[in-house]
Length: 319
View 1 (cartoon, rainbow, N blue to C red):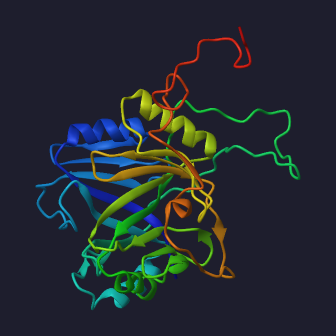
View 2: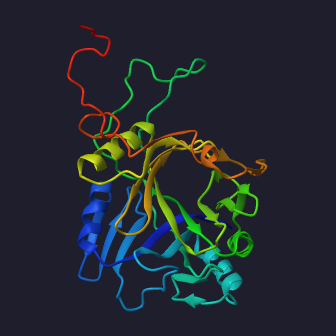
View 3: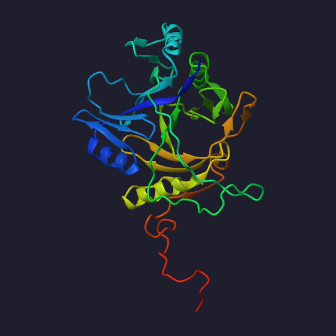
């Protein structure tokens, strides 16, 4: 029995038209909309809901909107859901609607579980030729004009009590610790075998509860670049990216979102097993990014934002 990943996420926001445009540009598919909510899907059916802040029954936020109001995690079977139902029954804010159960985590966030509705996918992704391994033969790497996210891969929250909130996900959901900033942050994955993290909890020197970012998995590094430059062409800002995280090895691109905080394209994270031993790091700029571009790459010039546009010819041309 283990959680299989994020199945759905709900934002609370007041500017639904801006959120609609943003997530369509981001590459999600709009499956339904009304005056109260927008419902999007990723390629594998992971849902992203943006509900108006005044929607009746919307779980309370851990900070002022716009922000994430609810995270729904998937399990594989009804039997798994029944086991979690018994485990969570005594937790604060416990709810049981039959197909979905949940409670409130120690940080005040509404967390839910359901049998996963995500679809299995077979996607063609770029292969990387290295000195010792060259699987890509007689075939160029792809280039993308935009991204089409596969799923919500992970979420990152600021927490008021790192030990209590980390302990909740380990003890109640069965999460595994991947790496740590001792006393400051915990990277966790849903199961022993999985990507580096599905959840990252971060406690600031002056603790607060809030959203840091929501991350969307894409196929490969080329889609990270293509997606980020498409967002630039659509007029959206880049906070940071492209860049590379040294702790998880992932390539990233972050954009501010009208639904709250940041959203991220990422790919190529480390794959871990039960044999992995969590490491400890001191937080700092070099631990966050091995390298990164502030403000991103302009989607039209294909150069760093505000850099001089290319004028044709070869860069080695000299007068």
